[in-house]
Image (cartoon, rainbow, N blue to C red; front, side):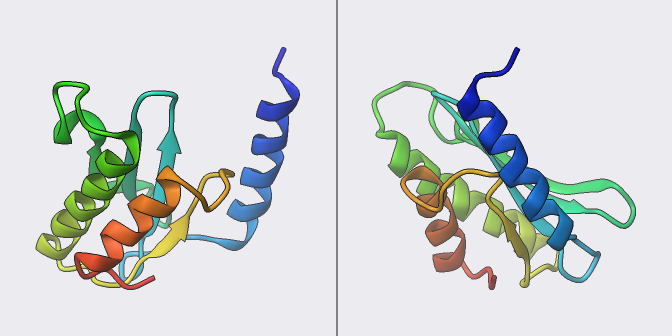
Length: 117
């Protein structure tokens, strides 16, 4: 059985996904946040393919960096991979999380590296 917090996130996530879809020209930048790591994917929902992915496990191997700083670096990394794939515009999917903290840091890192939301 899911907790209230998990049920709330699931309902918010479903509500967001009703509106947001990714295409080849403008894929969806999906964010997943666990307690220790943060993950980002560029997804083409028309074909159902993941174009690029990045996570905080790629950025840091030791736990000496703050989680919000790691999220900023993941945002920069996913932006670099997107630009290499020829993508500059994306749709941001926060995955039911509040746009605050690590999610916000990831988005700002991606914007600073050249992605347009």
